[in-house]
Length: 316
Image 1 (cartoon, rainbow, N blue to C red):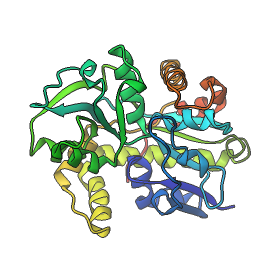
Image 2 (image 1 turned 90 degrees about the vertical axis):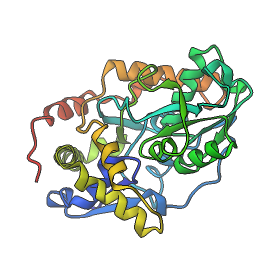
Image 3 (image 1 turned 30 degrees about the vertical axis):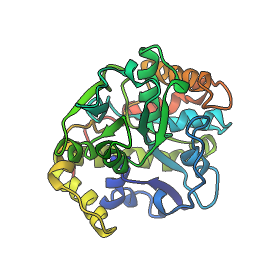
Image 4 (image 1 turned 90 degrees about the horizontal axis):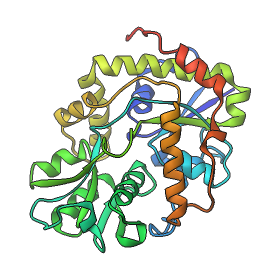
């Protein structure tokens, strides 16, 4: 059978694996599905809903069987009735991003964001970070003007004054830091563990254990290679951006990869508590159609396998 694996640059592990040829050794019939090439849905109202792009394509054709994302998409999937299961998580990505404003903006804390325009890549981990930050400051979603931005467009909009604050991530933050002084309103570590995570359909997990095991093993091996060869891994991202007509800084990409954890572990109780907290907040702020129980998406046998797969891999 053909196994369809979704990938895009924001999940660094899957993007590198796409270029390494490791999975093909054990799963010859692999179809790599570039999320950027799939039909894009209409944007949702950032004030009242979350996009469900990643989970939608797990259940449609064309689509994929397995995907890796940030913190928010599996919560969105569950709230839309998608029968998914968690596969695994990375370590905390505490250096990946933060909520910032220009140093001369007059905004000194998250509490000062009331009524302000705040840029996020809506539907990603950035939505959760912003909501956690607002909760900590005693605010809610309705107290700000959220603006859906691309990672790079958000930085440009902040510099231009079109945004009052922005959830930035590296390497995009590097370019902004080079041209303007920023004030950090809150960092990631103060709020949540912010791992990369991987999930799939329940039917795929139950009926294709051999293929799922091969994907996990290939990711472990590829991640070990990234950790040992961050500059070579960074080159894949730079080449992709250049091929699409853009420009990218190899040093900035290498620094970004060096600051991120690689390797997949099983979901933990602490992670599930964070996911449940995010789900409850998203629902309470009107961004999800229903409340959910994230632990219904846990398959203990997958966790046991992922834990066993963390034996040191050979990085070729």
